[in-house]
Image 1 (cartoon, rainbow, N blue to C red):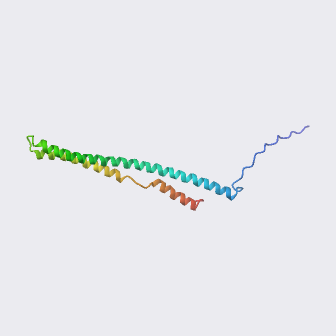
Image 2: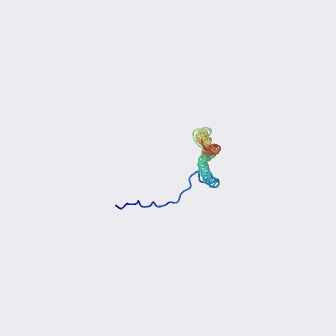
Length: 143
């Protein structure tokens, strides 16, 4: 009887195991990972700052509206004083009514703008937190 031999297995290049890598290779890997990590942190900080800038811009718009309303208070106060003299009612009362309406509008816009500015944080909170986590990991990478 003839014996059948199994086909030889194809040889593959042996990839270095974690224990077979040199210190230089390990340091190179760690350096590359740290560079990637810091790039990602910078991108996160940019995104947070952009978001906060948008919110600050909206709050600044409310302050602008409050400024315009304040201007309107002075304008209508002047117009009401002039036109009030020609009306049946006393001119002073007509001026006070128009002025009071615009004063309320200005107060509401100011309060909204102030509330919007209080929610703005100039510090990128998520980035600071992840940087703390990264520093902790760098000190104790096995935890």
